[in-house]
Length: 114
Length: 114
Image (cartoon, rainbow over all chains, first blue to last red):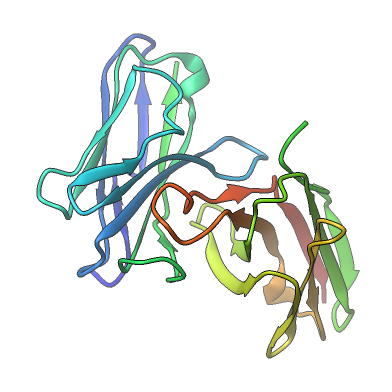
C-alpha cells in the first residue's frame, strides 16, 4: 500500500496479557517512529528507529515496552504484562532518512486492556 | 506543567470565518514547529512545517512562530466544514538523531458550521 499500515486496527486484551502491534512503513522510508495517544491528548513519543537500530528509545515508559525492527522495514511494538493504563492508540510513523522530512502517520492500533 | 500547552476547545466557527489556533511552549531548545490535522479515528496529517521564528503561508493556512514569546499560531482563512478536525501543534529540538522526537500539544478540536 501507499501509506503506513498498522495491524491490528483494534485489539482488546485482558490485564496481564502480552500484546504485539505491527507497523509496515512506507516503502523506502528508513526512519520509523512509534507514538502513543491517549483520549483527548496529543501523541506521545515512544521510540525512533533509523534502519534496524533504535536511535532514540527515551520515550518507552518502562521495561514492559519493547520494539524491534530486525530487517529495517516492518516493526513490532511488544507490550508485556499489559495494564489498564496501557489502553491508548498506538501510532506508527515513517519518513525518509535525515531530518526535516515529512513524517507520515498510520491510522493507529487501538488497544483496550480490560 | 506540560512542555507544550494547547487549548483543547472545542472551537466552533461559522463557515468562511478566520480561525486562530495557538500553542505555547516552555523549552527554548525547540527549533522546528509543525501543525498536524487529525480527523476522527485517523492518524495525524502534516499541514505546516516551519523552522525558527517567522511566518509561512500555504494556501488558506498561515503558520507563525514567535520564539521570543515561545508562542506559535496557525491561521485558517475562509474556513470550510471539511476543516472540522483536531489540530495538533508539534515541535522538535532538531533534525539530528536524538533530537527528532516530536512533542505534541493536546490538540484543539475545531468545528466549522455550514
